[in-house]
Amino acid sequence: MARGGEPAVRLQQLCGAVSAKAVEDCMFYRDARLVSLNEVGGEPRRFGVGAAEFHHRAATRARLWPRSMTTLSTHDTKRGEDVRARIGVLSQVPWLWAKFIGHAQAIAPAPDAVTGQFLWQNVFGVWPVSGEVSAALRGRLHTYAEKAIREAAWHTSWHNPNRAFEDDVHGWLDLVLDGPLASELTGLVAHLNSHAESDALAAKLLALTVPGVPDVYQGSELWDDSLVDPDNRRPVDYGTRRVALKALQHPKIRVLAAALRLRRTHPESFLGGAYHPVFAAGPAADHVVAFRRGDDILVAVTRWTVRLQQTGWDHTVLPLPDGSWTDALTGFTASGHTPAVELFADLPVVLLVRDNA
Image (cartoon, rainbow, N blue to C red; front, side, top):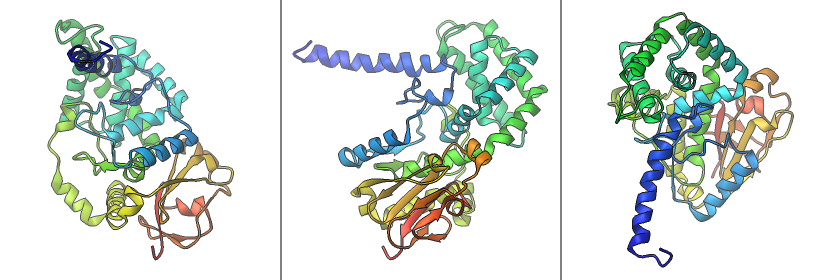
């Protein structure tokens, strides 16, 4: 085996498949701590990295793999990028989620506590802000729930279905969708949705501007509530997206269009340009992650917006490099030490271009 050859090749071929089935298609459906972490290529044991490590990884990628793919959604991701972003917000308000789950378990106890915790997070991730559950969404959630519990293979499985347990889960899900908890969930979603959208926009802009070549999965140009396949392979409404692209009013397609346009007009900054961290200063500096690509592109996004909403920006500023800069998203112009409250007045992200660059 150490000398290589056919045995080594066959072992490598086997290990990849075994790992995928054991981790992505089983363990990821059993771990219910924060399910947005349970993603292909992800590390569920890590609840995030600090800004310093983020910048280090990005700079390393710029140096070693500047043309590797960056993406947030594919045909194989466990949840759409915006569903992950919304679920991720729960990490900022664990007390709210614990209170909701405790109340929910008292009113509508799940057939299994861990299964309930897992499914509740996914229901929260796709729940419409309006609270109106369509027949299509109901069907999607039932399909997802059945796949999830079979993949987990604790109480039922693809090879040995436990119809009684599956019926209990479907009955519980109908109780969730039709019972009094639905209105409470709608209130929680409405309360946190702006933070979810902020995180989703930040993730999208980062994916489009960090070192690498971005891939935009079909349908993710607007808010995407997809779950795992086959849900993320539904037909895409391209007509709606053409209208949105023409109007450029939807925040996500504004970010997407502006970033791709800049990549086309400034290829040297993105494909060959260096990565330089930029650090905010002031009481809320930790809420900003910013960097330069080359000499003429500066990206800044907000984070931890639940706390930020409570504290405000105060006198936090972002020191811009020499020259005048214009936000490709809003047209806002700035120079020097720019107050964060002005920089992020319209959107929680900015994409600055040095004027006359």
